[in-house]
View 1 (tube, rainbow, N blue to C red):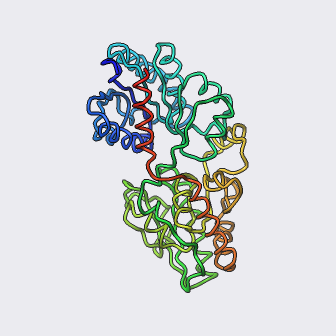
View 2: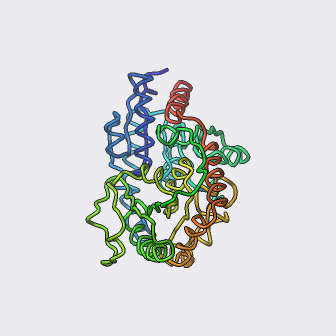
View 3: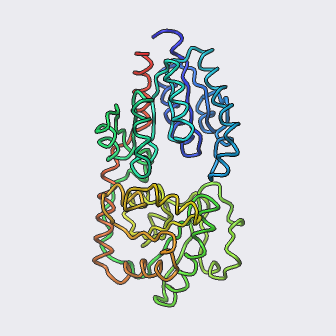
Length: 379
């Protein structure tokens, strides 16, 4: 390998990308002692050995108005990255999700003769097939983490590998489990309203009102609220709702314990639905966003389900309550269906563990690191 190709650009503009990319960087440094990694990332990537030229927190822009306001700053950052690539004679770049910025950067990198490796697909299969053409033209290889993504991209001419979901590297998630075989005598209902404050504000009030309905219906029943790592329980804003008094708030970060322990979950749409599936825990998925964002989303989204667990399964394994359908009454009814019908409860648990079997084997980060090093050898 030439000396110049030991320089490697990484760009991850969000917290989830920082987490997944940090594990790849750790393997890169384990496999090769002299790769010099720089670019956009967070604290985890820096701790793994990357030189941060820009912190990902400066790139975490949400909402159409916010994006427009930050365009000049993002363009400036892109110019700075391209300048660094040129000065360091970098031949390979690794882009992690974050499609708005990364696909624009990929075009400039390809024009400069840099090979582009894309890790973790944007959800173009859900909302933007036009971007598939851009991905095909602007990337040299992709590594995807959902099983159906491989054929989706391969059918459209993209060089792609399915490396397995990073969740499978977490021992408590990868552990094989048996389906639930019966309803517990005293059910525990878990509340997982989301990992962002906006999600909690939109989901938790409906969940707490559903708690009241379920208490009236079932009496002897327990409730626990799970919070993502880094959330402060004292910051919960639920309008002084007294229903919270009877819901145990778990320590932030204990969500896997709750998924394993709970009989049924009310869970915000996202990766948490896949995590819960790995525990075989029946759930009701909730999702609510601003009316404008939802209307725009409905114009773009081309698939019938929004819950990742249902998308991976290719069918609706668990109910979804989206936007106006998310009412306390419907949410309570979704949980109640499981508690009243043991056959539904057991069958859903079995089907969820079937989804877990689709997520691949452990070792995603190591496989990605090996592919990147192979690309560097050929650059």
